[in-house]
Image (cartoon, rainbow, N blue to C red; front, side, top):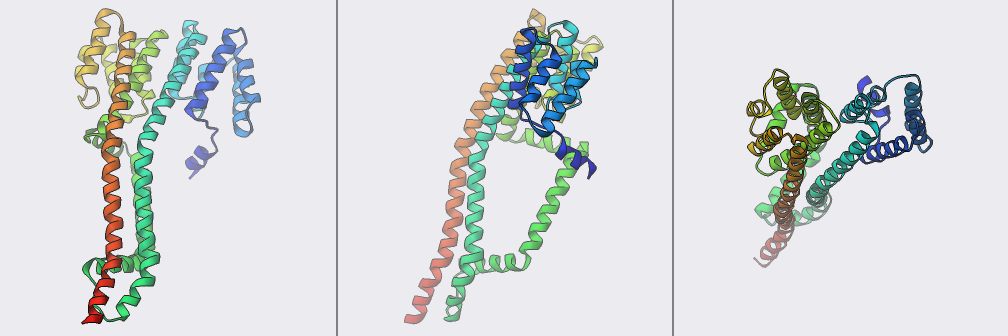
Length: 358
């Protein structure tokens, strides 16, 4: 409970806001302003916990703490990848340039995430509308109309009896069912979040799905590749860049995979051989070949950026295919559900008419 409370009260902002903040600090530092004053400028535009956190950051930097170490204390404001890029910039003397790189990357990540949400929101809303409409008819319309039919003595058609059974079940066990589903959902969330084996199993299963897996893989690989390119351009070592890129992916399997690759490279293995030891679902042959070719030609950062652009395009195409396939299916499903409910209400009228004429 304490962890949940700490998470809720922790100062947070979106990745878009992080991008704008990093861009502003970069411009101010480039124009000659000190890091504490640049952070203080951000604090003056904020309120509440955000202002307090930024003022604390300014105080720590003024006290001699490295900017990257201070940033790492606030994961709700700056990601681990941001802290790593800043650390490399401090060590190489190119902090303002690294911050500019970082701002552009965060902006691209925010746009990519926005496109992902945009691709999924309409199907989800359509599914929720279908469920809400069906439950409304079953719980509020049926109980008022069907007793009139039953009182006339006519035998009710099968669709109507099915809907009556559903209505009776929801009336008697609906609350218990909702509580049970909620408990299962909470249990699944806790298991995925706190049991690594369960989390990895779920993530691996998602990546194996036909279309969803392609979208997730393209989204994660585009992030990993671009972060790798930025870290290498900023002067990071290849193992350090690989670890930072894996962490920036926000995906446990990719983080583990690229940490494993970094370990092999530290032992003297080239990137091609290290990547051959990875799961083909996580890192397809194309990604391996492009990164290996980039290393061989001495243009690994450029190869990583090209790979990121390729997977961004693949993400857009896969998201478009998902919308094209899912929307008609959901429309048909919605029509079938609503049509079944309508038939269940209309058929008794004909049954009663036949009964009265008989």
